[in-house]
Amino acid sequence: MFAGIVEELGEVTAVEKLHDSSRFRLRGPVVTEGAEHGDSIAVNGVCLTVVDLGDGEFTADVMAETLERSSLGASGPGSRVNLERPVALGDRLGGHIVQGHVDATGTIVERKVSDNWEVVKISLPASVARYVVEKGSITG
Image (cartoon, rainbow, N blue to C red):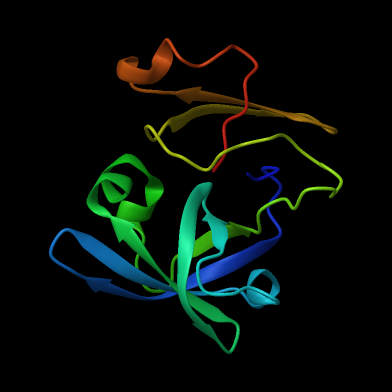
């Protein structure tokens, strides 16, 4: 589970295309600190499992369905990504509880900026619209 609060702006350093998946290498010294093989890290809101790590980078396998349903499918070397470690039991929740399981990708259609806040309107596929509550949490 994640809080939906971005801890670090990371970078995709490599993408290896496999038969029905891709292996991503990502730079994120903050989120890799203390991380181990098998841990979860949210990348653009998508929960990924750490396969390897070292020197502030980690690799994660991304399945074809995740590539199709998330922004990760359009990411490549040099892409900037939002990174977040999972919430540990007993930690303070500074945001919302989100799973990091992606069902679809929305599109920002309008932004209204004010001095102290911003309204962002997002369109989403009809196939998932009925499952989204008006003021529910959407991650990215």
